[in-house]
Structure formats: structure tokens, C-alpha cells
Amino acid sequence: MKTLIVILITFISFTNIFAQESFIIKNVTLFDGSKLIENTSVLVEKGVIKKISSNINLDNTIVFNGEGKFLMPGMINSHVHAWSTISLKQAAKAGVLNLLDMHGVEPMQSQMKKTNDSTNYARFYVAGYAATAPEGHGTQYGFPIPTLTKPIDAKKFVEDRVNAGVDYIKIIIEPWKPTITHQTAKAVINEAHKHHKKAVVHVSKVKDAYLVLKNNADGLVHIWDDTTMPENHLQELTEKKDFFVIPTLLTITKIKRLYTNKSVEEFKFFDSFLLNEVKRLYDSNVTILAGTDPPNAAINYGTDLYKELLLLHQAGIPAIEVLKTATSNPAERFNLKNIGYIKEGYTADLILLDKNPILNIKDINTINTIWKSGKKISLN
Image 1 (cartoon, rainbow, N blue to C red):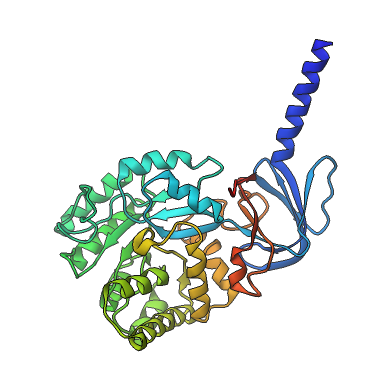
Image 2 (cartoon, rainbow, N blue to C red; image 1 turned 60 degrees about the vertical axis):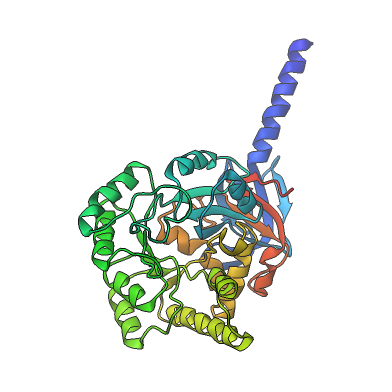
């Protein structure tokens, strides 16, 4: 009798584990990262998307009713600075299942990445220490960082970052403090590419944006905020280079209000200028990625990404394209494997919404359920 009870308990436990890892979301409106599919179903098995079809029926498998609901990939914030796993947990609760850090303490980052496979934490990708000048932007945060003074420094700098396990290389050109030269930045970009790493650049001035992109930077982690890029420069770049931009509109607009003394009309003009530059980039087929640069300006790691998406939509980007800025676009541009899409064989990072954000982008906040690798995230 005891043997039979043990067998039954073991069977029930195994069945419960399997049920948690295997489920169907039926009759849902699906944004798969590239297109919209109406009235379809998604089968997840052991954390992986097994099948997408309008007709999926399996016995003994949990079914979630998706009628009237909207399913999309887990989101990616392409510009953050996270200092503890608390930030990773805050992000995950909002459906932001991946964070791309753009400057931080490498030993700390290595420890934080150990939560990447944990259900209730966002995955963490890092640049390690950013490339900056002595006393330059990035040196003021209270932790020692390596700096560069000339192009010859680039080789060791990049090698050290690669040895530290970074996912990409970040460069800072910020003239309000001492800054590296464009020759040094170009050397860092070249060294990064030798190691098959993306090289992204912090800029605030349009002339710096133009020059680093001419020098083959893969992307900008902010949009310029001083003046309009000349049309001939934009045309030259888009014809000859393949790059992306993370505008960080929420950050820039909030910081301007915190640290500059302008009238309401001047702020409106500035906001309009930023949105217009983003629309020009989009209209020129430049890939846009969503990022918010927390904790700057008291921005959080989770729901504030929704505000960035709203701003991108206000710039004139269609809602379905806005969703790509936080899903498939960063996955493609940063070579993040098996995420950013809902496709067969991909990791089951899923957000089930009660309303369709393509009809109203504000409904991105109507979260019903979030799964990371096929496991439910606690929303409490």
C-alpha cells in the first residue's frame, strides 16, 4: 500500500510539473514580432514555443482562453543602468524580460547575470565599463573605471571588456565633460568589430552622431538633442551605413525639465523637435529601438518603458512598428538568440494582454499573464 501511495504521489508531482511547462493559449490575436495573426493558438512545451496554428488540441494540457486577448513577445529595454537584482525583478513584472545595460561595475554585473535563468528576473546583458576619457562622463558615479586618452588605448580596453564577458561595447562622446576624440572612438569601434562585438555610442550632439556613424558605429544609445541633422548628412548615412538608434525620448525630455530653465512653449518646441528627428530616422528606414536609461530622472525599470513606446507612437511611428522597437528590433540588432519573436523553436517569453495595443498603444499596460521561458512570472 505504501508503495502504491508513493507511486501515486510521484505520478501526480510529475503531472503537475509537466502541466506547468506545457500549455496552450487558444484563439488569441498574436503579434509574433513581425506581423499580426488573428484567431490563432500557441503551444508551449518545456519553455519553448512548439507550435503555432489555428487548430491545436492536446489532451491533459492546460489551456488558456485567449479570446479577445492579445499575445506578444516579452519586451526588451535597450538602454538601462541596473545596480541590483531588484531592478531585474521590477522589469520582469512589467513584461520587460530583457535589459541591456550600457555602463556599470563589471564584477557586480557578473553576479547579476547569474539570475538570467531565474523566472522572476529579467535577463541581463551588459557593456561593462563604457569607453570614456579621464574625468569624462561615466566617471562621476563613485566607482573606478578604466579610461582612454588616445587611439592606442583601444586594443587593451576592448580586450579587457571581452575577457570580462561583455555582450557589446559602449563608447561615450559627451562634450559637457572631458571626452575622447573621434579617432579614439573609431579605434574602439574597430577593435570591437574584430572581436565580433557591436559598438554603440552615447552622443548628445548631432555632429558627433554623424561622425561616429561615419566611423562605423553600430548604433546610438541616445538621439542628439541640439539641432536638426542636415538632410544631406542623414541621406549619406542611410545610403552608406546600416545602423540603429535608441532615442531615449523619455529620459531626454525629463532631464531637460530637471536641469534647464525654459518656458512651457520652449519645452513644447524641444519635444516637437525630438519627435520630428525620430520620425525622420524612421522614414529613412533606420531601425529604432526602445530604451529608457533608468534610473536617470527617477525612471523605473518596468512600466516606464510603456511611456517610451507612447512617445515613439506620438512621433508618428505606427503602433505595430512601435511594438517591434521593444521586441524583434533589439533582438535582431543585438543578436539576442531565440527571443524577441513568437516563433516555433523560440523561447516562450510571452505577454498576454487583455486589450490590443495596436488599436491603442496605451493598452500595453493591460497585462493579464507573463511567461518567461514558459513559466509564469509572479505579478505580486
